[in-house]
Image 1 (cartoon, rainbow, N blue to C red):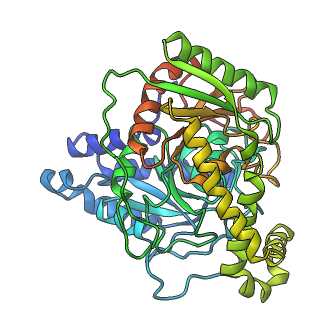
Image 2: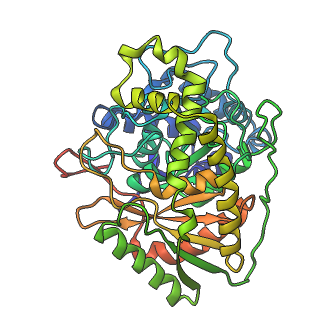
Length: 460
């Protein structure tokens, strides 16, 4: 299938704009045309900054080659998950009763995007307070299936060719799961690498800023733009190796099975076996082990931390809007109110033990290969899927990446997860690039057309 302009990677577009072979206005208009065509069905956007985006694109087109060379994202439209504060667009946190106060500081990552020349095309739909109650967004590959949550709009917008890049966040599995369901790359960097200043706070211990793209090169490009220390986020040290070069050195992977969560659907289990076979055929060592029993309680601890953080940050004012909250959000608050300080301390102490156990397990390996979801995106829009297979790496704060590995027989995307050593984000991305070079010819290009609610091909 020939890619239309709006499916070009951000790095490719940036290069074409610098060479004068494409204008930013042409590319932005191509993205807007795609939005006009499919947004009534996908509903990825909470707010579109159409006129401002076209104005920014026109400004970019007037810059000199020297000025463009200093802006790594010059003229590139990007979607912003609607939990990041923006100076020129409303922020709702996925709630009908919340409006960002005047004078609220713009999110640090949004400021970095502006400084890099990016065009903020709009705010993408998120689930209610970035938790479990879904919004209206549908999966671009099949409109009758969920795109995942809570970064639903961002993942769907990238997968649907509406923007090449989008910001997301992850407190349990809100980047990796939507990326897998939508057939694109999703990256959760190491904890503390990207600033959360100006982002909705659910749980300080778990909240991560992350990103979506249709190429690994674009993930690396956006990471370089966004990474850096920020005193406004007490956990953002911004220190990680972003320039590792593996060279020709062989690397070893550990396939880590998790027998304590939901079972893998046959189609997902078979695809993961195929992934290992492809890598092994290329002389890449892939050893298999099971997650140690001592880590089996991690899912409960993640949920307790999330509930405690959500309730501490938002429980009181949510109680004043109780009738406007979904039953799912109410359940989270009620769970948080029922937790004592001991449960929080136990979860934090257990996290240290999990980290020591898994670092020992990983001592002889460069990355972990593991499931990202139990299977393809579930049917219906009322359930966004489970974060189980992503949550452990969120709890530990290790870098994790969702890689698309083709589709199921009925055309729904499948993914696998690569997890890297803590603070070695670039190393993980380079390993992923080497794996992708082997996997992509076997499982096909990740660009696929949109489908209607019955699954009939509608083209791109």
